[in-house]
Image (cartoon, rainbow, N blue to C red):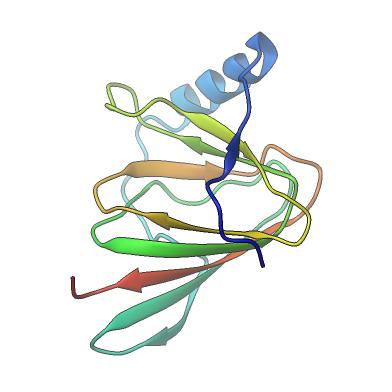
Length: 129
């Protein structure tokens, strides 16, 4: 697995429209879980798994702790941020073989599979600094 910053791609007008439409359709969503299911939890970490089929999105979630993400399957995934967020929505291309990144606490988003392949990742939530 590769450890690197995700490859952010330029959001073309058609993709921007798709992300904006998603944000509008989901603007009243309540906060939910960061992943699809918890694999393991102890006093130090909580390990999540997320699987998103093409066109599927996670719940709106907030990263209350620092995370390491191991993205190991998929082609493109978007982070759609709520209206008024300090961070703009983004789209990443996943390299073949995967990608591992660190994510600092504080962000709120939906993960949205905008690609043609199933997206899978494992998220390691660090409960203690």
